[in-house]
Amino acid sequence: MKKVRKLRKHRVTIGLLLSDFRTVHNIISEARRRGIEVLSVSSLADLPLNAKVIITSKKEDPKLPIPTLFIEELPSYKALLDRAYEIAFGKDRPKFVTVSIDPGEKRTGCAFFTEDILLRTSTYSDRDRLFEDIDDFFNTHKSCKKYIIIGKGASGLSHALEKDIYDRFLEAGQVEIMTVSENSSNRRNVFIPAHPSDESAALMLFVKVRGKLMLSGR
Image (cartoon, rainbow, N blue to C red; front, top):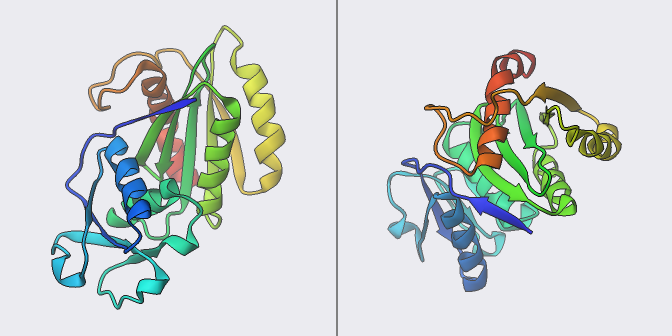
């Protein structure tokens, strides 16, 4: 089972124009877990001027003046919100994405990035669920360079996870796997919003190699 933690809220509004109430509920629930503002509207006239992107369905056949995501074209609610959030911040065609992983004895912290934009963090106790989310994330960003960062500590907890990740993702192509020392990764950083320790460690691993990623991901 995994837990999804809220991101720090940003002043970004994502519009939602859908007639399927169950889908609306699921998208809004996922958005709330992340702290993202999603506004469901029944017509374009109700769409606020500050909306940066809208999620809708092809059957609604909307003619929209802002970037649009169709639910039929993405594999999950997580993928829809990932794409909506990065588009809202000007990353319509990101050059690279990163999954940062801090292995733990019982829980694994994980952070998902589009370039240097944090999309979401999660804590996993089920490795299969972790790999499913990474698959989903990478499938949503097929044309990007892809990086996986794995924290490497003295306990050796990362060895089995590292092997499984190599076996599963290295053959997918365009994926580079990096191991990074976990030293100091559990320390609080004033530039990172409060997160559970596993997720904070995953964030700090990304911070350690951010400069290298920004250069190699160009």
